[in-house]
Length: 517
Image 1 (cartoon, rainbow, N blue to C red):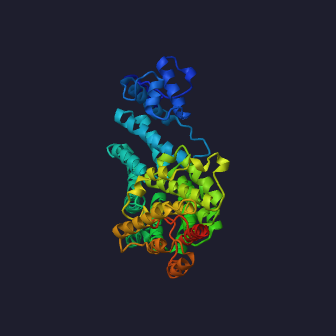
Image 2 (image 1 turned 90 degrees about the horizontal axis):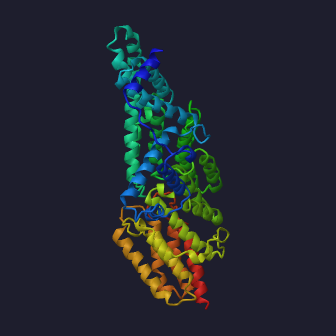
């Protein structure tokens, strides 16, 4: 009863603020609440494309109207409040997610009770929060709850045993938190230098290897989940950045085995390693195995999250390389139209658009309009609009513009027979590619295949109307290019959407087609 009295005292002493949430509109009485509900439903159904459209719907002049801004803020507050009451019983959430969320909730409640002096109930809540934190390997919450409990137990002679128990927990888990934070810091350093820049550099492999050397012997000492994941990802990078795909598969398999046998199966983490494994399999030319691995990994990540988009991106690329163009088209269209597409980085968004452009060209050269069944006729596609939607690629100074410039040449060549004026435009585009590469590509970077393909394109102005001579002249460069493997999993910023050899075959097809006229 004393615990309940503590709670009753706190609630009576401090005003309990009314919590406004988004819920069934029939339960709301006021006109304002019904407007919030209408706004919420409209956003959910994508009724308005812009803030101005929404503002005008509710009788305001524009999005800058003070009344509309208040309406938006009110809805925002209710949506944020509503997140506290999300039902985590859905199969989408694992037992790990549910218990982690409960540990966070109890920790917050315990902290509030401690500050208000409701110690009788505080002990019970804080001990439960600590137990769940330990169970879910949440090192930060373990230390937070242990520190809080120790602070009180230390000044109570009758609770000396509890103080000693909490001190042992603190002493045991503090080093685990330290090593976890250190590994996380190293992991973020690598990610920040690679992900958004789309440029895996070999010199980072040395950095990753040096980082992992700090943790290799500690993997058997510290079993905490996040440390294990960060350390293994760093190890994986040390192999991927030097194109050691076989070792990459082995590291992923070991990580997946560890995570599967963990007391809480970390589905998100398993999904991440499954995607990385499939990337290695793609580079090894094992397309079917890669796609099977991706399908398994897809079930481990939450629909619409970054990891899910990355899984689907690798699936699209794998299908491109396996010449399963219809499957790749379906994946690309699905991603572009997904309601969560904008949550991924701008560079990743543009990569999806790049695939979209190439698949439009492939549909044209293969005479298989993949878009027909989706009610998306080719007439809706505009290369100029695509280019405008890709500012990061078009303005990039490290090679990102190359695939986009090549795509423009491919489209121009595809119309060469019907439009001879394209010849001068093609020559100008090729000249632009050559200048771009000479100005922007670092001699020390990895772009051997791009250099070879740009050299092949440089042969076109002179031999565009003489396919036989072009074939002979291009032979040596094609052979040199074939000695180096294509890089397709973001290992270089100049994305080779499909193998350059295949792109060259398309070029020769259109040149011979134009020459026959």
